[in-house]
Image 1 (tube, rainbow, N blue to C red):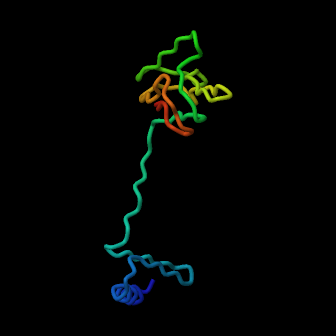
Image 2: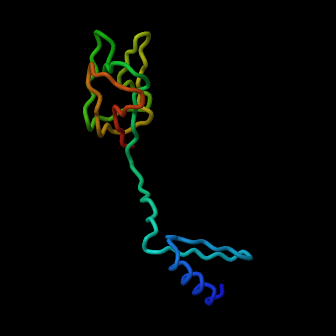
Image 3: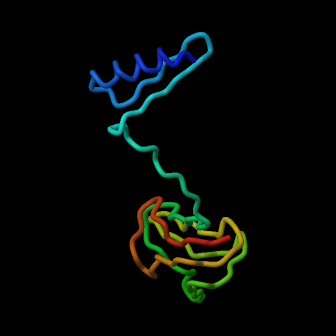
Length: 124
């Protein structure tokens, strides 16, 4: 790309209120960002998988008469029961989507939950 063109575009950009500019011609492209340009969003990975409430209702660890105690650090297997959400008309089972360790348990027996509320975080 022609350095003279880059200099002209950079000088022109300083006279505007633009924070970034992209120019493409004949398959060549230049992209210029000023110090006012917004930074790229951070990308990160997380080893935790959220298990969320499947419905609006009341969380129970197990059916009446059964006992299920879930603690942080406990190993779980894919498909293992993690409790249920009782709605007015039915019970929605909650199962582990993968095998791993429970790292965070936010579910509380008898507590109301909303659809999509994270109840557990499992680390693979």
